[in-house]
Image (cartoon, rainbow, N blue to C red):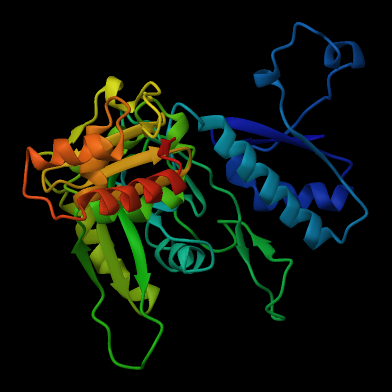
Length: 368
């Protein structure tokens, strides 16, 4: 049996043929692959063994080797994500660093939109930390590497993907103590044939959080995860959008970002209080009450960001006002009265409020 060190955790793979073990050791060489003896049956059944201490095990199936190797990648990535759940910021992102300064950049993007290509092109000139899962300690900004092989399509262009180790691809060294300096969203221009100047564009906090949350594993499981992410972004001068056509063109842009760290910026938001995150108590017949949310912030321009499970909702205008006024359950008529104390309201205000409440209820933010 082989044990792979993946992020902050491990995964065991057994039942491999000798040549398959050799391939795993080669392609996963930066994941501390070691021989591992499986525990005795008595140890496996020990009722006192904590479930969190159990290492996932994947046993060789009769599947084609390329398909099974791809399954190893899936399971290893799941284990890496689980290893930091609730304690670390987990980004669906590649991470590269300057070898000398150990300052790192996370490159976030949805699957199939350019992370692996950018990693392969830029990683030849930078330290390679991961192409898939960036694990960040929110206190120290230290990145725990997950230097898995890159999963690339073969000549057929169909799955399963082939695995190529970082040494095979000539990627830079893997650092154990790199520090996250910037977070970037990849924005590759695929349409047209005009020249595209590779560049970094600043992102405001709402745009950044809106784009990063879908690429953040278990943000709702991290205590005050949304506040933690916003604080991290502000400490780095905000996130940036990397606009480019060819990944090679990004190298000077990335090197400049990492060579000249941005100064922290003052927060343009306030964290909601614990009371505001808590569900409001039921009220009179017809009243609406808030459901509990995991985290939330209110921006200086009045936009409300609420994290509810894995979903991020951005409210502005009436939606934000209604949610904030529901610190206790209120009927539509009562809400109209509250709003009228702040601004002029139209004659059909109650109908408009009901529509707004229905929308928030459909999003799971209110209950009847």
